[in-house]
Every structure is written in C-alpha cells, then in structure tokens.
Image 1 (tube, rainbow, N blue to C red):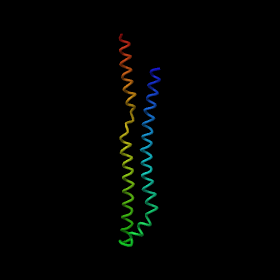
Image 2: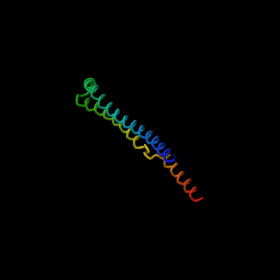
Image 3: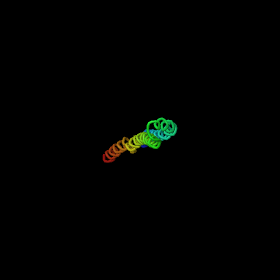
Image 4: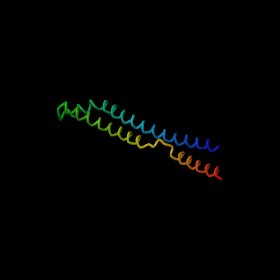
Length: 109
C-alpha cells in the first residue's frame, strides 16, 4: 500500500510538471506564431506607410527588425521558463527517503 501511494504521488507530481512544460511550449509556439503572422499581415502596410517618409528599403528593414525582435522576446521568455522547470519529483524523493528511514528503524528493532 505504501509503494502504491508513493507511485500515485510521483504520478501526480510528474503530471503537474508536464502541464507546466506544455504551457511553456505553448508560449514558445504562440510567440513564434505572433511574430510570423503579425509580421506577414502588417509588413506590407507598414512598409508602405514608412516609405512615404524614408526610402523603401529602409522601411522594409525597420519593420522586419521590429517584428523579429518582438518574436525573439516572446520565444526567449518561454525558453527561460522552460529551463527553470525542475523535472525531478522532489516531494516523492523526500517521502521515499523518509520511508527508507522508517523501514530501517522497523527492521532494526
């Protein structure tokens, strides 16, 4: 029964960690989609508007840099959060240590 409870605890802890990792992955994907989709949809319009004030090539360069930067910031944020996830089931490991100690005490009696 004790082992079964430990397995259940490990499963619960790993499920929480997997959901957190999936959330980070989703943030990375959304960041990339926003950067690409937003850039493609607004790129032509912004270049045309900016081309009224500066040369066409400079307008295209400026708009490209802005959208690439925004996408990079979103993707880096997701990657940073992803790297911070501790994949080890810490609580389960602690309870296993406690169980080992308890069993050792019971056996030595």
